[in-house]
Image (tube, rainbow, N blue to C red; front, side, top):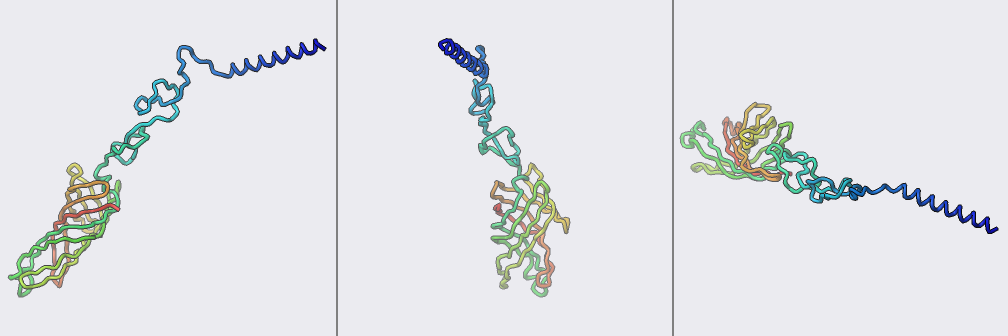
Length: 237
């Protein structure tokens, strides 16, 4: 019986030794010359949290930069946007803009008005208007449409009270930017007339542009052709 237990003890001991040996074999040996060879962390030296001891990248790198693909300085490796994105004026114009206010000025020649034309002569019409429609720019297609319309302020010419004149210069067509993106050229598809606007200021949300808009209309039997100077304040929807 003692012999039986002695043999059983030897078998159990051999089993335990064999199991320990297999576990040791399953553990990757550590290279004594580089104990950090299996260290996980950020391996990109450009990242804020770069770990010089890391040998395996774990995707934790934090790289600041512009993450917007529409920006001219887009950084594909950036993981966190730092507000540095820059946009071309063409990119900024893209979208729907409300014409919240405008100032206008033009001269109208009334010398052809029967009987009183010589008294009226050339008159200046100027004033302000609000909520004058919207302007839609599409980029990169470079097409536009607008429903620019407003009514001039009533004026008094000599002894005559002249009511406000409805102005509608809605159009659609193509646009482009020239002069280092500071001048907007809009070409009407129907008339092929080109209007030029100076971009005074332009941000993601607001724009101020000025230019001359041609206007033709029959008013009280009188053919009126005007070049209206406008300075418009726009806000993006």
